[in-house]
Image (cartoon, rainbow over all chains, first blue to last red; front, side, top):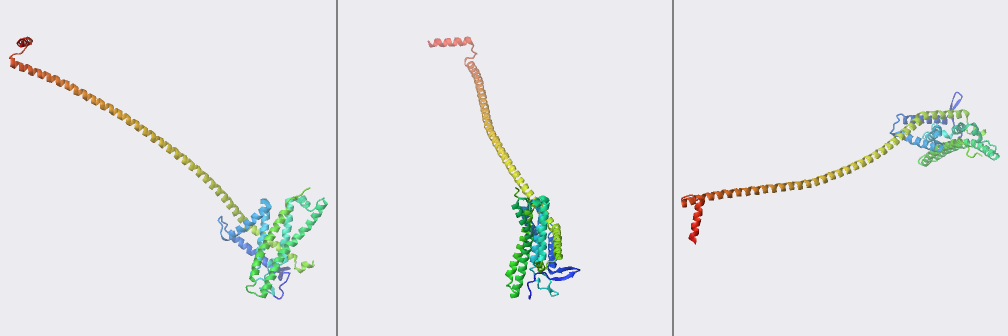
Length: 240
Length: 164
């Protein structure tokens, strides 16, 4: 643990020109785990659920009710899969990042595995997807004219507010990506430091904390994306 | 853009993660959300249906119970009526029979009395005639002849003379 704080992800190797980092590898592992679990859960869907199906029904039912409460049944159909995928992807990657072997198994002198969201590439990509999809849905549900009216009006005060909000859209991307990145990266650093001080029992409370943080960050990302989508795809409330 | 370099931002990695996300979105939509939401919807429908059925069954049950109660009360009313009627009829019948029996008995008694009376009259006549015969035959033995009217008169006159 001579240099625990490394901001950019370690590059394990190149596929042609394409750098394969340890976070990307974990991203693939997370995807594989999620896909396998979901396929297992719905391998034989029964009306009377049991085991994995029951668990996923609970999660998905909760997510679906949340989305339809906020967005209404029609928009929920479109928003739900995206928002739910954000949640599951971030949650699973955060929790998988806590497993033993992360940051300890070395590959050519670099850690083979590193929690996915402790790399700004990954979180920024997710935040960009969230923001761009939000605007695409806004365009789709409002039409071009209504969409532009959100930012530009003839009223000088609201024109100024609109420009501020336009800036706010970029802030959203930054806040979404850096919040997730900061939380998970800080967690990694804390765990590494504490484990460096004393490797037994002492890190345990921090692991519990990281489990909670992992869940909360996934939920926050999901809820914020959902709220942004709902707010932006609604018509402007005050029309003078 | 020095800060982006510091964080190791690489457009290729960003693109890779975007591709990852959409791939995952597609696969999860196909294999997780669709089947689970479908089964949830199905279960909801089934529960609604069965709740509705339960309501209907309960309604019907209470209706049937009411009907049964009404029928039972009507039947018991009818039974009471029949019992009452039969009681009345019995009393009437008893009285009638009693009257008839009384009348019959009286008739029989009357007939019996009449028969006895007739018999006694007949017996009396018979006795009288027998007595008369006996007297006649005794007189014959005493007087030696049969008294006729003239003799009787003579005797009576003789006796009357003796007396005076």
